Length: 84
Image (tube, rainbow, N blue to C red; front, side, top):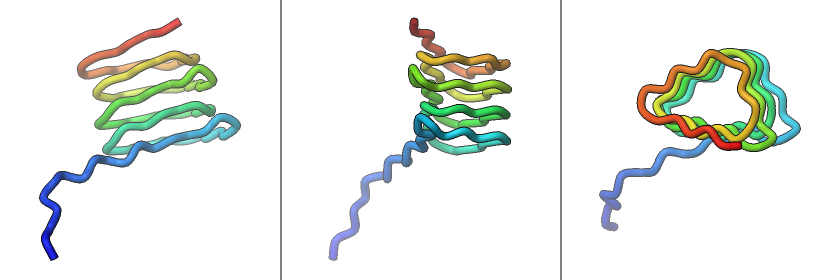
């Protein structure tokens, strides 16, 4: 059986609409927030805040794409996109 030498793509974490999390989230890959996060989010990848997404707290990430509501201190290492 031959081995697949392709690097595995990291999984995308999703917090769905209707879900509320209070606390700290740390992830090595990308994450999408469509629900509510009250606390801290640290990601080595991209953070996407969907239209229904809300973050209250602090965000530290590599890249961010924000369409929802963000009431947080945001630290982005490379690129942030703010959408209406």
